[in-house]
Every structure is written in C-alpha cells, then in structure tokens.
Image 1: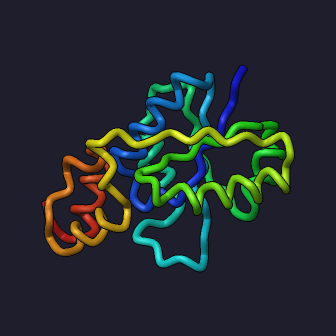
Image 2: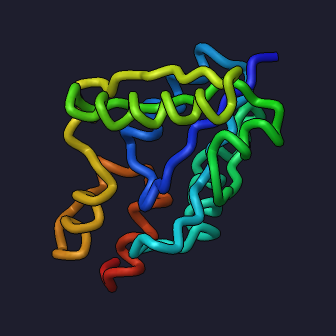
Length: 160
C-alpha cells in the first residue's frame, strides 16, 4: 500500500488543497493530511478546528486520514512508516522554498520522497492568507473553500 503525508498549516483549507488531495489520491492508496501545530504563527483556526473541518470535508472517504503533528516532518513520517510527502506548488516561485525543504527532509530521513503537484490554473491564485484576509474584510470566498470552511469563516466574521 502506498501511503503518503500531505503536511501543511491549512489555515484555512482551500479548494487548492482539495484539488491537491484529489490528485494525490490518484497516485497513493492512503493519504494523511497532517495539520502542523505551529505555535509561532498567528492562526485564525486552532489546529483542532482545522482537523475537524477537513475531516468533515473527507467524511466517508476511507483513504483520507486527518491528524495534527508538531516537530519535524521527517520524524512524523518515520514514526508512521510513511515514505512519501505530497506538496502542492502554485507557481514556479514556490519551488525554491519547497526544494530546500525537500533537501532537508531527505537529509533527516533518507528514504523520504517528495511528490510535487502543480496547482491547476483555476486554483493557482488561492492562498490561505489571501482567503483569510478577504474573508475578514467581508469579501465572499465561498468559491475558494469547501462549504464547511465557508460556513466557519462566516461564523468567525459574524456573517450568515
């Protein structure tokens, strides 16, 4: 069975993330969406809220597991006996950063491979940061996030 981890902050989970998961499941048999517990970052949603929302999106999909992790991704993968990491790239500008992470992860856990999936053009402009900002300013992001996330963002920002 080919198992992979798709790590990220997912604050919030967007349709771009949804697309990467859909396409990753064409390559692997089981995907763990691993929400990073990053205490140094100002988050809109707690890690547990993100896990809950993403789990709602994938309810009924047995090939997807959603959990949190903290610390090194290489250690998380080693403990789970997973040797594939999925990463999404929105633009060529993302590659340098992601390549450096790949090299470090490979140094820490030599058997760890990274599969880079390019975003579809319809999702290439979507980022969690932009979605948070637009939503906080009253903009409609319903077409950029799954329905469960859209509901949560409206709840947070006091809109119905």
